[in-house]
Structure formats: structure tokens, C-alpha cells
Image (cartoon, rainbow, N blue to C red; front, side, top):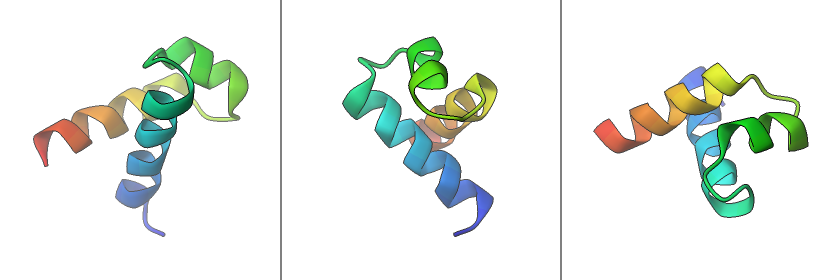
Length: 46
């Protein structure tokens, strides 16, 4: 899994399990909030 795919997965988990809240996702999962937000932005761009 490359970095873009990983960030996309993080963004999906944020949307699905954390009510689209990056800080909650950062608390629940051991990921940085910045990576999650970047993954969501990449996912929206396509």
C-alpha cells in the first residue's frame, strides 16, 4: 500500500467511524490529523 492509498483509507475511516471529525479520528486511530485531512482532500480531488 503506497502513501496515497493509506491516506485514502484513513479518510474513509474518518468518514465512516468518526462522524467526519479529524480530531476524533486522531484520538481513536494512531494517525496524525494532518495525514487524515490530506487524505480527505486527495479523495475529494480524485
